[in-house]
Image 1 (tube, helix red, strand yellow):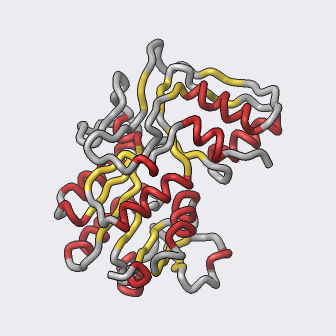
Image 2 (cartoon, one colour; image 1 turned 30 degrees about the vertical axis):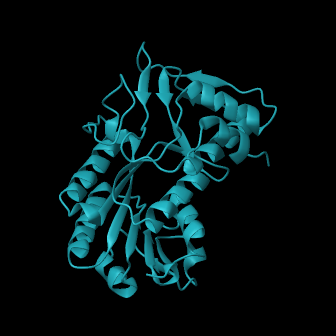
Length: 275
């Protein structure tokens, strides 16, 4: 199918990741998105208002008839589960594939090692358990219908994390760092390029979309602050354990081309700019 004829529906397209995806894909595909409250999207014919707690997702699915759905939904957890149950119903009766943006938090109960695609999921957090529940629903589907995209912490100039760091620096307020936490990271630019590639190649399965290297959370945040300007920052060190612990998702089975990989230093050097 010609790319321009491929229809993509991004659920949560007004959020940080969803909107970055819309901007990446809209020039290549017939791309639609949902928003909830932001009035900026009201006049955009490609955007549908969708309140996850009140609205029926089937109306938007029938209106757009997508070939690919990307779920970047946020909001009430019970409503998220219900929405994804409806998506599963739709997938079974249509020629459509679902990419679900999951999280490294599906492994947050493990701490000794980084996690790979086929490792067993286990989470201590409510957020991680939500992602696991939706992942498990998807794993009961025909495997070519679904892609689970596990993502670590996402940075970028307009990311909520960078905005929060800038705000705290301006106020001379402390910034929380976790000295014993070993992570990998990504940013909106590279993540959206990777998802674009997965759609182009019609890929399915589980993908770990983070930097190829690991870094201590405290070291990464220090580098970010240094990149943002000459700040005399206050770091509040938070220790959840006396030993190093990992919250990182690395690929082993489903590796992307080298030109789509990224390192934590590249994110700092090339993808964060001073205002």
